Length: 309
Image (tube, rainbow, N blue to C red; front, top):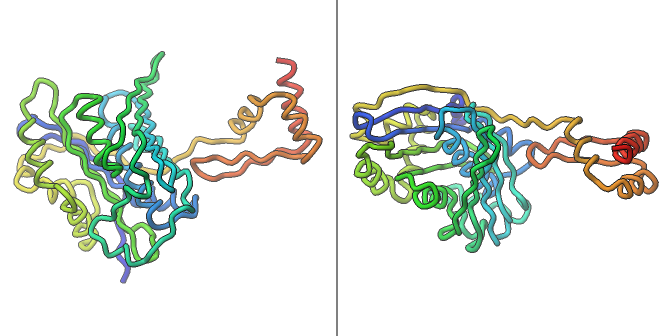
């Protein structure tokens, strides 16, 4: 019988009498949707899953509606991973060159699959926070380990200067298809004294320990935020105070109108050339792989409007 994870969700809570905040996200179904749309398996899926979980965890740091764009850009064969996550629990993402890494079924036996070589040893992790204000907040760090969750944890500690412990895991089967995806973030709250708690968990959940937590949750059919939180926190879970839960889902807001707007940004000479040479144009969304086709008549209408403006 195949093992299946339950519905995706985000849990926000407190531990140690409010000294530290805890966020747990599960995104198994959302990641399956993304991987299916892009037709990817194996290492690219693991990279996309860990990045998507990091994005979801980052998008819970404020009370307002927030969109986080997380980019991991390296010199490895994958090229990079880009994720958009919203505080509402919606997430989308893509891998730049997923076909560059082939899947070896034997890798599925690894407790924690190393993806640093696929990402590359040189590069950056960049975070953009959009709070709907006049300006976005942007920050980045230079990669060291190229393991995505390690790099995002370091970004939080150095760039945003929040004492943080972050672990994310995506498990796949021998076919390279997603079986479970979950992430955990623990942070010291402002004016609180939770640094010791964060450091304790950073040491306790070192290496593949959190991966084993997710694997055990999958084995019991309990890939749920609260179950994973309590299993990962161990002795600190006794006073876990759950503040809220919200669903997680794949969502891409692309549309034919947005695709048309993209064509409208081209030079009118380029649009005219498309009309004369190919008689049509195709715009593909990087995030969901949907294709939008425009006929010669539609291209001419877009070109005429562009020239008029």
